[in-house]
Amino acid sequence: MTMDKMLSVPGQSFLVKIDEPYSRGEKGDMFRMICQLAYAVPNFFAAEVPVQRFNQKENDDVRERFNLTLKDFPAFYLFTDGSTDGVRYTDAAQAANMIKWLRSRGILMPSIDTIDELDEVVNDFLSEPSARHIEKAKELERKYTNDAKAPMYVKIMEKCLAQGASYAADEIARVMKILQGKVHPQKRAELSDKLKVLKVFAKMEACDVFQCPEGYHKKFGAAGIIGSDAQTCCKPPCIDTEGDEHDAQGHHCDYYDERTAPECGDWDTGAFRASRMCCACGGGHVKIPEADA
Image (cartoon, rainbow, N blue to C red; front, side):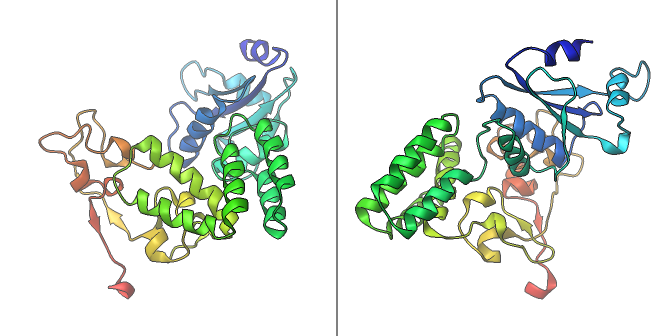
């Protein structure tokens, strides 16, 4: 079959998602993020096999082959070294978890958070700062050439050695001040990555590990926000108010999320205003829980 021909290509690895066609939701968003990151990894591909339930039941043989039911969807399998058997991913369907799982199997995926091996070097460096830790970090930087955060470790370590341990905390304050202003999305993403690395040096927690109060939701880009309180890390419940209106592309407010927020306002019409109607764009109707009102 075509799938086996693809998987048997020597020297290539494949992450395959078996799912219903046009699946949506958090798991679908997670896999899209994995696909974007996989682009930078040599000899590694992320692919999807859509299984139809009706009509000709296209690819239903794949579902049967792996003994899957519809309740198992989406199912993720990693194929390496020309094997057509595959190893199934069974952990939580979260990008950070899947990336760690792929790395443990030799797939050098870029990290959406920090890099575990370099984090360990930082911990040793903070205990006894020296140039040998910088050299170790440089070795790992060469290993993770496809991860833009790897060289950040080296640069921050060099700054800490030259300017003292307070550099990381001072730099966090400076970067967060920049992010409060108007910043190009690409630069914002770069600075958010830098904050993730800086928090390792400063021993500060990012909002991605903070538990929001009941009724609140984590802010977009939580992993790049330094803080451990509700005001910094969380946003109150919000209801989109577009009703039956939609943007020029036919999207309702549920289209806008952390991934598409940079498009807020790009497709506005006379009747649809993302910044006024959509929570993800800063609009909508905010409902403050009674306990906080």
